[in-house]
Length: 569
Image (tube, rainbow, N blue to C red):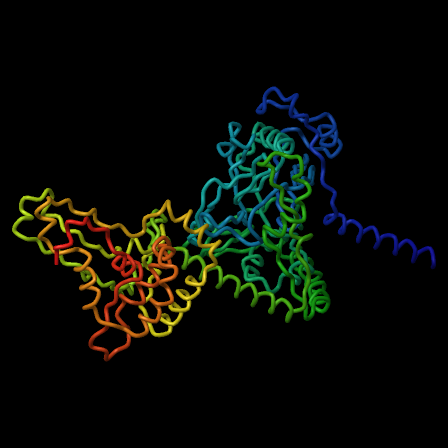
């Protein structure tokens, strides 16, 4: 009795091991030395592969079938034996596939196709830029009936994908040779089954929340029938759906109504037994994954887990990891939070894209940048008095004097002369009572300069001429004799100017350093600003206009007169 139980246990273990081995990393390594390949189209398979075919009773030119599982990243080659039953001959690890689980819908979505695709000899491309390539035939009749479109969806080498299934060059050399030999044996079309995963009860339960689950259930019918018969199913399209191994006297139309059809009786019996076991397994799987959902990784997340494989390789080498390795089971509430966070990030990204588009539009494609408009308000500018302090009177005899038309007058310094070199005009501020007090304090500090400092300033000031005086007019003897003295006229002009007590007190403080004030443009500018700027306070109708300290000092200096001018007025 014990021996019998051991035998049963061993048999069950062997059965489970056989099921489990399908999901293990039992990938075959391509037995090709690319450097030794002289002709890609005439390459012969290795002796070991030929020996395996012979041991499995597989003729060299018997038909083949290609089956792809995205999630596991596996590509299988199935080959018919002498009885026309197919067995797996080779299993390769897909180097790269783009997108996520789910069918390709439109051009540019980076999705790799899912479905059943016939591959004819004309779809083989020995001159591909990706070493060798086989066109999948997307879109097929089902895709076209459902409005799905895309071009150049291949199985190719170079390990770089954008909607394709990309292998290594060595793998593609073997796959291409196997397909070539099958066509030589008379096979008209090789069936490609591109599936999201092995469509077992556990995998279907794990992906039950996927938006593609109904599409996958339809593909599962063809998957199941191949698992039962080990022969590629006969595929037709009607009512925009796949139908498998259906007998009919009518014709199938991809977009039309399905004709009257039936499933062969032997297939019905086999499917009934198969589905009974599947239903039991599916119920157990639902309990196992209760409250849990599968997180489907993105292409970027799959690439991240194999980033180390790219080190030292060419830039074109871009493998993607397996979805089964990058994905994970999560609690439903945790995944909901994650999806909500992703939605927020997507909205933020969309907003940034819209703002960027508007900015590019406003800047005319980025060729010009908008410049802020100038402030329309006028800038405050000091209004300096330009009243002439002297008036030159000329007599009749001055007509005979040289340059008699030129009048000697003391010109007020222009605003540019009052400002330091390079000073911005916008920095000028209207004079206010508070500013006047500050200006007076600055003038007092200037008056208190030490003699030693004044001497140093005198030396530096010799190189500057902040206030220029008009050259004295040259007159003849009689013009000078009978004309009025410029000194008396200047004194008269100063005497008639309005008197400001505060200004007189300031001038009294500044007289000891008159020479210093004359040689310092900045101090003279401050003093003249106080006496020349009109007060900013509203309601004042008039303002006293005073001469700058520099002008008053010049006016007070008496000029030497020849003795013959003693009779002049």
